[in-house]
Image (tube, rainbow, N blue to C red; front, side, top):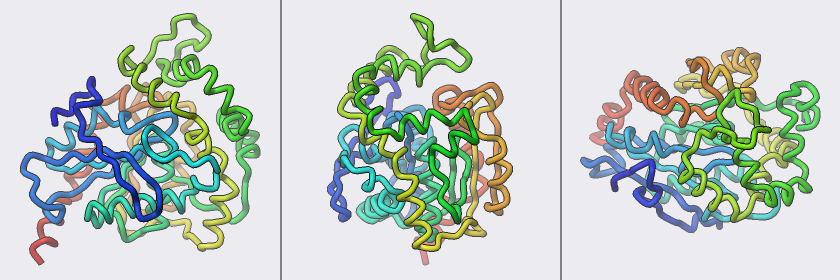
Length: 324
């Protein structure tokens, strides 16, 4: 496939019914010299809100051409993937079980898991729920937040960190029809160029008209699923507490964190705190960039991840294990 970022149809989109009982859509691209999963390291990329697999359109091609298999699911609640109505279906435990089922279907043992926004949160929780199923972790825009002993509601977080109070609005089921009714203006606000006034009649966007149209057409299939992620805080806490999830990630797990210095949702204190729980954490600030770094800094994000992956010698490691 040509993997042209301007053309969603140029990517290899597949669909699968997982053993968890849910149907997923996903992109699956392999390098030209691909022969077997045992010889090719895989990058599993997870998108956030309100995004799609298409959020990785600028990275998929370059990463594949650099020798990696790239798998990008359309996350639960979005696009052509299943859209359960209950928030209980969107807990991290269940989402991570879906990802394991997808990897098992594709015969992928240990990918590099890469996530942005809610995808970053999910990727980090994957490293806690299934620590033996990944080689490395890359998270973007949302720093690692360890499981807490006591439940802190999303409303309490909004009080403590006012710039995150939008999450409290999203957590209200009554907000769903409002978003669906005003979807186009909502998306324009979300995808506006950092530093611009959302109240302007013509807000400059990070998306081309064609890209915006693709997002709008996919997301108008329903916003209850995407918003359900914000309605799982108590459910997630109870699952993590019952399982006794640790606060620290696996000691030998390499972790890269990329973030934009103009991202209003990135809390600086959380970045500093994350280093206490991740022994091999490297964080890189992208100066002057906002939340959507895969678009705002597409070349830099692509390059930073590839450079970091090269230091891990994953291709050599995968090849050595395959020969054993």
